[in-house]
Length: 354
Image 1 (cartoon, rainbow, N blue to C red):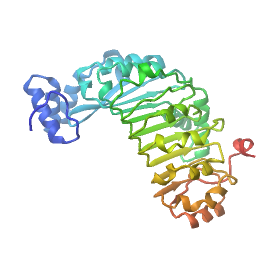
Image 2: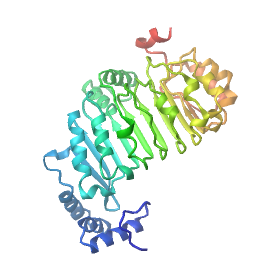
Image 3: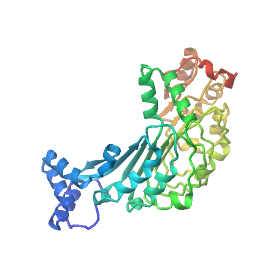
C-alpha cells in the first residue's frame, strides 16, 4: 500500500499503520506514538502523546481521544464561556490535531455565546476536514442539577423541568454564515444541544448527513428550509411551548431529498399530524420521532391517519401525555409504535394546552 502525505480517508487499520510507518520514517513523532499503540504498548503511547499534546496552563480543558494511534477527536470544556475559543485555537494548532475529524465543545454553566468558539474552529487548519461538530450546553448541566437535588435521572418530569430552567438562562446564539459555516465543506454531523434563540443564518453545509438542534427555544426554521440538504438523512429538532412553527414551510419534500429519519420533539402544535400527512416527505421516511408532542386532544388525528404511518419501521411517541387506553388503541392500529414514559400532562404545562 503506497504511503500518502495526508492522513487516510477511511477507517481501515492497515491504512493508518502505513501512514504511521511513513511518518516515523520521516522523523515525525506522531508516527512513533501511533506505532507504539499499534504494537500494544498503550502506556508508552499515552506518555508520548501527552508530551505532544501538552497545552500547559489549559490543563484538563482540552482532551484528545485517539483511534489507530492518532488523535481523532478533540473535547473542549470550560466553566468560562469566554475561554472556549482560546482553548480550541491552541489545541487545534498543535501538530497532533491534524488528524482530528470530530470536535465536541461543552459548557459547564448556562451562559455565554457559542459564536467565538465556532469561529475559532472555522479558522483552524482542520476546518475543511472536520466530519462532526457537537456543541453541548444542556445535558451535562441538567445531570449536575439532578444530582444536586438527589433525584434519579429516570424521573423525567424533573429532568425536563431542570433542562427548561437551564436553557431559559442561556444566552442566544448569534452566528454569521459567511465567517462560520463556509469552511466546513466536509462536515457530516452538526449538533447544538442548548440555547438556540438567535438566528443561525443559512446553513450551507452540502455534505451534512445529520443535523441535531435541541433547544426548547427553536424558532429559526428559515435556516433549515433554505438548505440545500442533498445528503441530509437524519434531522432532529426539539421545540418548546413558546415556539411558533409553520409546518408547511418546514416539511418541504424538495428541501430534504435524502431524509429518512425525522424527529420533531416537544412540538407545541396539535396540527403536526395533518401537516405530516399532507407532506410527500412522510412517504420516504423510515422512522419518525414525535416524542413529547402529543396531548390527549392532539393524538386523535394520528389514529385517523394511521394507515399513512404504517410503513415506518418505528413511530416514537415517548414522553407523550396519553392515557394507557389511548396507547393501547394506537398500538392496535400501529404495531410500529414506541411509547415510553407516557402519562398525564404535568400540571405546569396545563395552561398551555387547556
